Every structure is written in structure tokens, then in C-alpha cells.
Amino acid sequence: MKLIIAYIKPFKLEQVGEALRSAGVSGMSVGDISGFGRQSGQTEVYRGAEYEVDFVPKVRVEVIVDDDLATVAVDTIEKAAHTGEIGDGKIVVLSIFDAVRIRTGERGADAV
Amino acid sequence: MRKVKRKLAIGGGLGALLIVVMASPAMAQEELEPASQFILDNLWVFIAGVLVFFMQAGFALLEAGLTRGKNVSNIMMKNLMDMSAGVLAFAIVGFGIAFSSNELLGGWFGFGVGIEGVESTTPGGLLPSTFFFFQAAFAATAATIVSGAMAERTKFKSYFVYSFFITALIYPIVLRWTWGGGWLAQLEFPFSDFAGSTIVHATGGWAALMGALVLGPRIGKYGKDGRPRAIPGHNIAFVVLGAMILFVGWFGFNPGSELAADEFVPQIALKTLLAAAAGAVAAMAINWAKDGKPDVSIAANGLLAGLVAITAPVGAVETWASVLIGAIGGLIVVFSISMFDRLRVDDPVGAISVHGVVGTWGTLSIALFARYDDAFLGRESAGLFYGGGLDQLWTQLIFVLSHFVFVTVTAGLLFLAIKATIGLRVSPEEEMAGLDIEEHGSPGYGHDPHLSLGAGAGAAVTKRSDKEPVRSEGEGKSE
Image 1: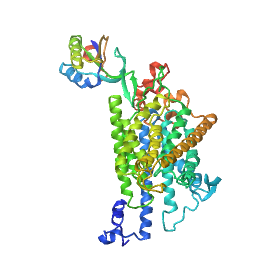
Image 2: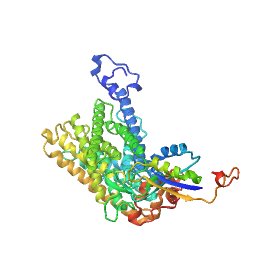
Image 3: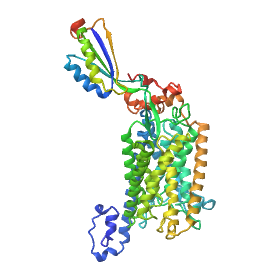
Image 4: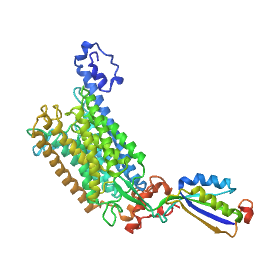
């Protein structure tokens, strides 16, 4: 099992979610976050004075999938979240030891 | 109510309230019966006063929108209290200083219980209660201008003390010198300020300047390089809604200052409208050209600048001139806001520029554009462009300069005295956490960190370069 965490542009969330569903991913978690990467914030103008937004708003998407679906899911997110502009985000993949479905007590791949 | 001047019934804006049927054309030229005119005058000035009081809502929203969500309770409370405490102070002390017939020091001050005689109901002219109501609304306006410039860093109790003194003493003495018939009204060429570009707005504006100077800038307003950094407000919708409420309220402020329901009221409303529109468009255009994008809050400031500018000259100038005066107000406000920013005078809402600087422009514009005899002028064509020469310009300069010196000295001493006694500024920790909890007990938007942070960008701005622990406890929880 893999945990895929993607940091994407907020307005890409809908496309990413739809694409993952089409690819057979059965669940995902989403959170509003903010941060900086190589882009290192951005400069905006307000009332004639500049200011730096050090932490740019992003959305964090978390998906847990079977190993055989992991590559497809990563490719799907990459394609759906891509704009080619600076700040498109990152995807990381982690191995996970176990999973539990709280309602039924199922373990491992069955729980996902 | 039989004989009614036609234009009055419509122009006074009261047509709907009065069961008045248009009289024959021949009667249209006749004067109203005194009793009818008495009712119309009092009713109109009362309604105008209500509109001016509604401007308090506009100021509150405008200032709340231009500051961060973590200070929203505080800014609302300041607006609530500078009106409420201000009205009481004006009633007990201020009104008497301004308008009492008992003169002290050769007319430099009045004396008497503020609202003495205010219960009189003798018909004829404006009732004392109508006049007090309208003047109290103006006093509250002068007081509330300051809260925005001192936003996000002033102790509430200190602001409360300030709002008492400005409406009890500072503003009433300005009134005494001017509309109260004092020395500026007794000059050979008397001062002119129809509805208070200087008397009301610049009083607030220059007091705001001293408040901002004595306080110093907000933490994070200036980077290590000394350059101003924006601290964005948390709700631009509030800003525009507030500006539009002020715009509506101004149709009480200016047309009501006619202090009668007469045929000049609609003209004053028209000129007020045109100046406001010109101010908004001019400020937007200049800001767009200067900074690349049209900033919404600057356009809102431009609307208000047009209104402040036309407040003094509205009775004396021709209609076309009101457009020009408003547009120049919009132009001035854009550059003035940048200038104060660079001078390290941190005014989050632009109050000093809108009310102080543009109020001064509006007052001086009379010396250039005055065509009609109005508001203490005492003569036609007093303006430079109408062959009136420089007489009025000298008077207007004496007026705005003496006013500037008086207000900056008294307000400056007041703020320094407050600073030396009970303190003026909150602690850095409180400032960064937001004033709502420490000053008033609970946050304006509840405990959801996303909302009270609204702040978000603004709070984050200060971060890296200042090495200050900008994230408060509440902020840390936002994930």
C-alpha cells in the first residue's frame, strides 16, 4: 500500500479529484494548507505598496492505494494538476505498513 | 399648507411625506406659509442628521475592512464608542463651547451647559433640538475619522479618552471660531466652509495624523530596508459597502448643511454627487496608471476624497467646477496616501489623506472657484477665477493654517498626555495576537482560526524579514 500526498494549486482540486475517480481511486482526503517552495512566496500590490505573501495557499491531497494502482494514481495527479507555471506543486509517495477500516475492523489492503 | 412652492415640495425630498398637491403655476412663485416652512426645515434637517449618523456605519465597515480580522471587534467598538461617548461629551460641554451666547475671551470660547434651552419648541427657524441633533452627528463624524488611522495598535481605554476630548473641546473650539461666529467669521473677508471640509473632516484628519505619529507604525509595516510594506485588510467587500454608505450619508451631510428645506438643496445634492463620482474615477485612473492595477480600496478612498473636497465649496461653486474639484481630490488622495506611507506615518485606512489633505484642498478651492455668495463669503465672484482676486485665498489660507496648527498642537498634546499617563499603545505581543481578545474578551469572528486569521496574508507578511514571532498562538493552530 502506498500513501500519495500531493500539494497542488487550489483551483486544480476539482480536476484532480475527477481524474482520480476515473482512474479507479476510491477515496481521498483534502486539506487547505499554505506554504512555500522554490517559488518562495509571491509579491502582490495593495494600496500602492508591495507585500510578500510568504505562504502561498495550496491544497493537500492524500490518497491511499494498492501498490499496483500507485503509479497510475501518481501519473493521474501529475497530469491533472499540471499547468506548466511556477507553483504547480509536488507529489510524494510513501509506503505504509497497515490500514484499518474503523467501522468493520478490516486490515491492510481490504481496509483501503 | 395651502400655498406651496413647487420646487420645494420636490426638491426638499419631502414630497412623499407631505400631502401636498401641486398648486397652480401662479402660486408656484409664492412663499410658503411660515408654519409650513418651519415644519419642512426641521423635518429635512432632522432627516439629514439621520443620514449623517448613518455615516457611522460606513466608517465602521470601511475601517474594519481595511484592517485585519484579528482586530475587528476593536475597530467596531471604537466606532460605536466614539459616537456614543462623543455625543454625550458634545451635549455636556462641546455644544456650549461652540454655540453658547455667553462668550469668553472675546469670542474664542463659549460657555454654558451644552444643551441648555434645547427643549424649546417655539416655532420659527430651526428648533434648538433639531440643530443640536444635526451638530451632534457632525461632531461624531469628526471624532470617528481618527479611529481608522490609529487602528490595530491603540489601547481601547486610551482611544475612549481621546474621543471624549475631541468632541468636548477640540472640535467645539474649531466650531466656535467658524460656524459659531468667532474670529474667522469676523475677518474682513470671512472664512468659508459650507459643510465642513476643514471644520469637520480636516479636524478628524489632522487629529488622525497626530495619533498615527505619536503611536508609530504597526509592527511589520516597514521592512528592514525601511520601505513600506502593505498589510492587507481582511474584507474588501466591507470597504466598498462602507464607502457606499458614506456616499449615501453625504447627501445628509452637504444638503442638510443648508439648514433649511429650500431651493438650493437639490443643487447641493447634484454637486455632491458629481464630485464623488469624479473623485472615484480620477483616483482609480491615477492609481491604475501608477501601480499597474486598479486597487479597489484606493478607488473607494477616491469616492470619499471627492466628497470631502466638495463639502466646503459646494454652495459657492458652479456645477462644472464640482466635477473638477472632486477629480482633483481623487488625484491628491492617491499621491497623499503613498507620501504618508513613505514618511512612516502608518494610516491603515487613508484617513489623514482623505479627510486632512483633501479637506484642506476642498477648503482652498473656494478661493479659486467661488462664484456665488454662500457660507459666510458675503459677496459674489469671490474666487480667483471669477476676478475675485487674492482676498479670499489669504483668508482661506489663514483658516486652514490656523486650524492645522490648533488641531495638531491640541491633539498632539492630548495623545502625548495619554501616552505619558495610561499609555497609548498595546504591547507588541497583544498587537501581534490581535486586540480583540486582550481588549474586549473575545474574537470578532469566533475561535475559528481561519476566520480570525483573515489576517492570513497580512500576518504572514511580517514574518521572515522582521524575525519577530509574528504567529500568535491562535495562528499556529490554523492547520
